[in-house]
Length: 246
Image (tube, rainbow, N blue to C red; front, top):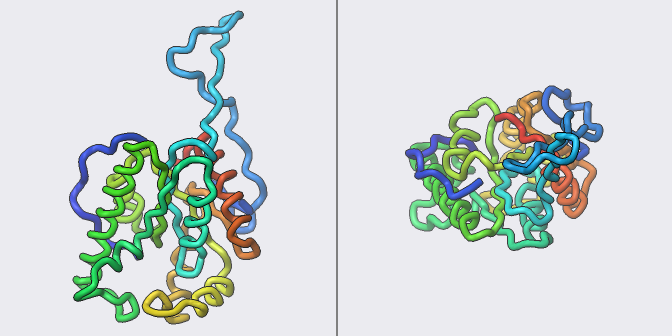
């Protein structure tokens, strides 16, 4: 869920079937690579004829990345994030906002009981803790993927907060399967992570606002976790070549 963030942190150490900027939900074909090709490497000497050599974009399978996986309850964020982190060629950490939030034992704010000052504080502290962890991993050459339900109608508190916590190099990707799919997945949950159908539908409806936002969106309604993770790599390759404006 989306809540207020804490004070700004010190500067960071470093940096499908899909929809892209301006596309409607049904426009889910392959995304074109940016026009003009890669940008020349800074300071690279000109090649014969005065043409600068171009530097290929980083390979998302081996680059040190910070990824924010966004989606409603039941989108599969946690499963995809864990699988993606497990199967990369380089060390990658999965930083789960829900797991960090549940470190609070006594006085735990149960999301099934609604939102109050205590739950707001718990989520704000969990986000700050995840941000510190992500920056620590990046500073030591370890990639990280964070999963969170960030709403498009609160960009300053959501994406803006994550950008302050982790850094401007953060790559956000939205997982947004159909409503029937997220309802079915949520029904298989247990404990306090299972929400009511009404709450899941409300969250899913707000998440539809990501279409046309400029962020890459993966509709993983008919995909298993490995397939979604492979598509995530393709989306990240495009994000590295042409970072989304957010």
